[in-house]
Each structure stands twice: as structure tokens, then as C-alpha cells.
Length: 202
Length: 220
Image (cartoon, rainbow over all chains, first blue to last red; front, top):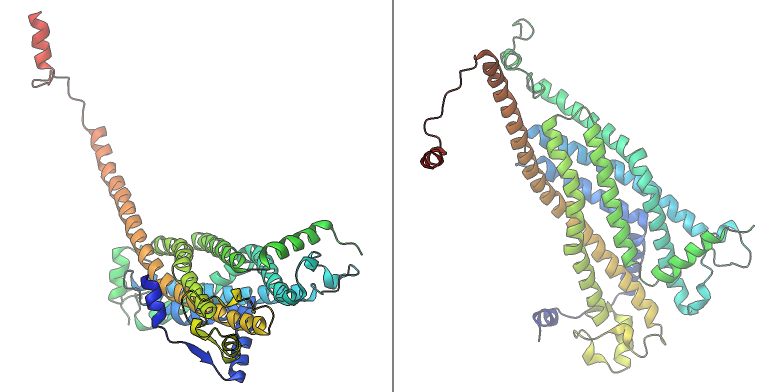
């Protein structure tokens, strides 16, 4: 008897008795599986964990850690916003263009497969649901190859640059010399450290 | 209105190949999406003039690491978790009471929860209302496992690992840049001395390694 089998046997059997709870769970599964809510969940959890991990990265200096955190925030916000809009719209479009009545070619059955007669009638709703998800995921991926460059990238740069300049302003307030460029010469750094850049007047 | 045949052919192809199990589509589209997003972000960092060289030397490997580690952690965490959740449902370890009562009615009580039990392969699975209940619950478990695995792998494991990889890469780049910089600064004065030093007249080499051959030749 394998170890995995023995470990598996240790798990107790669980049954869900409450029908209402089961309905809620099934509904939750259905919603979480849709492309847009799925992206939203991933984005919401990412914004909580990833910036925190980046900011407390001890392997790099504080400035780099902050810049990396800001870029992560920008990337998550831009990626989630654009991703949700694109996926949501495409999922809606696919849903409205997969009407099961294919007697006449219309816009509302543009993406309806014509080979559904090969499938048993009782299996069709499940297969159609999977088909809609698969098709909208493929189209969303193709569209997002473009939107990654056209929308995500400038939006990420905009958000991270705004956060970086806000950080720089904060640092300037608390430490006057902290906002120096890393390649500033020693004289400038010294003058700034002793607050002599403005002629020694503090 | 007549649709172009390419559209209906593509729809038929997707329905035939991916509507039974959309797992592979989700995996491949996710992977392509990560790679594309990472490539775009690398371009963005590289072309952003507001980042210093040092920040770029960390953030570019961080982005590349993000895609690589995301793919690996997806296969290492999300997929096994999803498979495990599917196994729990398939064997009846976790299931709705409605489903259980139908299995009990057919006399398979002892098999419920055992490793080899396979609910969709039961002979009465398709005949009763079991299939719909099973599919809905299976979908819930599978999606929850995929989302949980995705959160753990993409939002916790990946950032930790990619930062580790990126800082290593940054150190390597730093060493390389320092080496190049040192070499450049060392070369400058050397060049000057070469120019300023007058050429010394040629002298015969006293302890040349070829001396023994010379004597040998001489003896001949």
C-alpha cells in the first residue's frame, strides 16, 4: 500500500448536509470560474501580499525595494483593471454570440459551434459552458497580448512613477539629502549632508 | 447573413477539443499571458528613464523571474492542489449529502472515500440526477483549489523566489559592471605611461627558455 494511499485514508469523510449551503458553494464555484471575477480575486489578493513582500526585501537597498514595490503596485492595479475589463467584455460578447438556435446565421450565433449534435443532449449545457469559458479565455489572451503593451505598460509606468515621486517628496521632507541621484559626486553629497547647498542657511 | 467558414470551423474545433475539459486551455493561455506580460514589463522598465542603473539591474531580472517562477510554481503548487481536490470529490471524501444518499441506496456505502472509488465511473451515475449534483460540486472544489493554489503560488511563493533570484542577478551584474569600470580606469593611466615612456633598445634575453636549444644547435 503506497504512502499516498495511507495518507489519503487518514482524511475523514465529509458530507455537506445543508442544501442551502451547497447552493451557495455551487454558485461561488460558478462565479469564481468566470474569467473576470477570477482575475479580480487574484488581483485583490496580489495587492495585499506582493507589495509587502517587495518592500521588506532585505536583499536590496531601501530605494530599490521601494521602487520595486511601487512598480508591483502599478503592475497589479493596471493588470487587474485592464484584465477585468477585457475579460468581462469578451465573456459577455461570447455569451451573447453563442445562442443555441442555429437555424439561421445571425450575430447572436456567430460563435455557436455547428457540431453540437454529436453530443448527448443532457451533456450539452455543461459542454457549452466549458466551450464559452475556453473561447473567451483564448480570445482574451489574444487581445491581452495587445493591451499589455497598449494599456498595461503606460498605466504601470504612470502609477509607479507617481508613487516614486511621492516617495521622493516624503524622503525630501524627512531627510533633505535622501533624494540625491545615486551617482551624485562626493562634494554634492557632503554639502547636502551638512545642509550647505543653499549657502549654509538652514 | 452568411458567416465566413473560418469562424465556424474555429468554433467547431474549440468545441470538439476543449469543451470536455478546459484545463489545458486555461493552463496554456495563463502561461502565454504571463510570458507576454513579463516581456512587456521588461521593455517598460528598460525604457523608463526614471529608474537608475542599479534599480534596473534588479527589476529586469525580477520581471523575468516573475514569469519563470510563476510557471514553475503553478505546476508545483496549483496543479497538484487541483488534482488533490478532484481526487477528494471523485472518491467521495467530500460530497453533498444528496449524492451520498444515492450511492448508499445502490449499496456502495463501503466504497465511499476509499482511494480507488470513482464516482463518475459508477454504472448508475448517468441515469440519475447524480451527474448534475456531482458536476456542480466538482466545479466548486476544482475552482476553489485552483484559486487557492493560484493565490499561494502567484502571490506568495513567486514574489519571494523572484526577489531572491533578482538580487542574485543584480549582484552578478554589479560585479560585472565593477569589473568593467575597474578595467577601464586601470587602462587609462597604463596607456599614458606607454606613450610617455621612451622605447628601450632591444637587449638579448639572458635566461631564455630556448637557450638549451641554442646550445644544442651550437653543438651540431
